[in-house]
Length: 233
Image 1: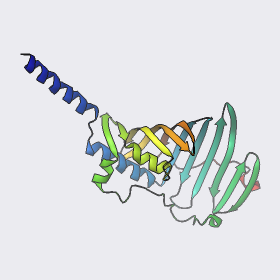
Image 2 (image 1 turned 60 degrees about the horizontal axis):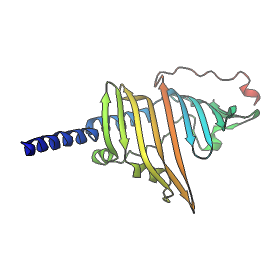
Image 3 (image 1 turned 90 degrees about the vertical axis):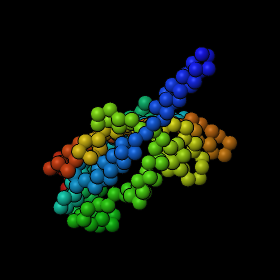
Image 4 (image 1 turned 180 degrees about the vertical axis):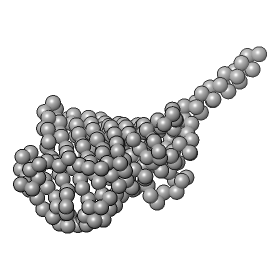
């Protein structure tokens, strides 16, 4: 009787453990397909916050509006915060009618978009690091996955993130999770949370960064509100 109970306990324990690390190839491939489709968008509004927690705590807030159906139009705003000191409108960058406009903490300038090697009439090619991966290779990047409605949660192979952060091997990622909301085969939001340690020579410190991103009006954004004094930059 004791042997039967032991076998039963072992069986249910194995089921529980396998459930903790289960993954669905379909759910994993759904994310990479949505990621690719999002990068290919003609227009959209993206807001993101990047939080970095090492010796110094810092936050980067990004607001990006982009339309590139005909001529490239873009409005980018960046705010910075470090150790409680915040700098609103640290950088503002705009493109319109083949020109670029920059406002860096009150110092303004303008130039031609062609000076950046960009043709305003051509769509910007956004690099997709997973474009040449096979389906099986993409699935190998994810250790576990789960799905609740249109919200997908993933545990990413820490070694992958370690290599992406620093190919020299100074970063050792201990955990990396990704939560994403997928609608109409595109991303409407995602949160990437990474923690580990970084070692430089004999100094080692804990590191953590978190990216929260919201994506709106994908392929639907019709206009961008540019500053009225743009031409005076």
